[in-house]
Image 1: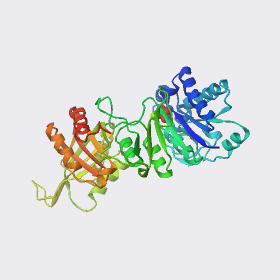
Image 2: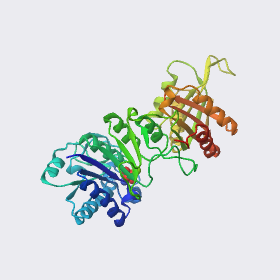
Image 3: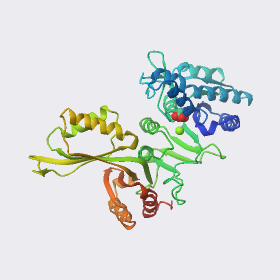
Image 4: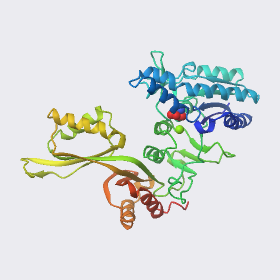
Length: 418
Ligand code: ASP
Ligand code: MG
């Protein structure tokens, strides 16, 4: 029997009427001849509420109990979805993570998959069940405790099931009708993409396009799971939404396929750090231990005998999420206090945003950077930091120019046209 994975996000199961609407979509696939694994999120807002309850009860909470509480939202929707399908005469049952069992690491609140054995669910399909409704976002650790995968983790559950069960496709139903060239709230010219390559989606996802959890795209790329993002609020067919797939499946791709942004960035500069072997390790080691997700890194050229300094000094700039600035600052101050690094000043700029252009076509086309910089210059937007990879160019700019920059770049690369 061909098998589909269908995942419904929080807004798609926000109340009983929406669960019914989602169940009707599942039923249609069953009628087309599929066995279906449905992955559900908690009703929208539920996980936030549960997290809030945990934090109010115990500020320094035991992560195992956090997982016990926050995983419960998905249990409710899984049961309700199974009941709804039964009411529609579709043979269905619900599965909590431990019943599958979805085996994960014991890294509570950010667990990773170890194994998803297919035996139990396959046996139920063999008995005549048509749908297995699985609670997303959760699993069970080797110690037998309930785990969760990190916020947005139901996407990753869906892809992992699609890989484990060799599904024909993994359909992610959400409240938008696909992946866009950029955020349609920023420019009305944003266009829905029919297809996007895994690597591009990975960059867009990690750059702040919040359609899919980044890990789900990583997993889909590794196991070549064809992933489709589509709306649960519209009538949809096999051609709806955006297919995230191998680049070989995309006949012609533009040089740039999307413009992403991330609003909540900060830039920190260590002024006049001693320039010697090991200095980068002495800075970024403590930052990593403090759990700071450093993104861009720029080291300035070295200057000798600058000011009162004897020997070589340099400036080191890095960016990180704005809510990690306090942690990063403390890590640097502590490192300075122990003498492992020295610097004259630590300059923090929390008024920056990151804007990036992404496209696999960049690998074979020159001139993308020049076009990007010219178009920002034409808008008088000053670039503070630049970072590039094979398929991406990112800049840090003043946050107040973020929308303007996204619009200008979307125009410059002609993204409104297919
Ligand atoms: N309910 C979880 C969250 O809100 C997981 C998910 O929906 O993907 O983060
Ligand atoms: Mg989500």
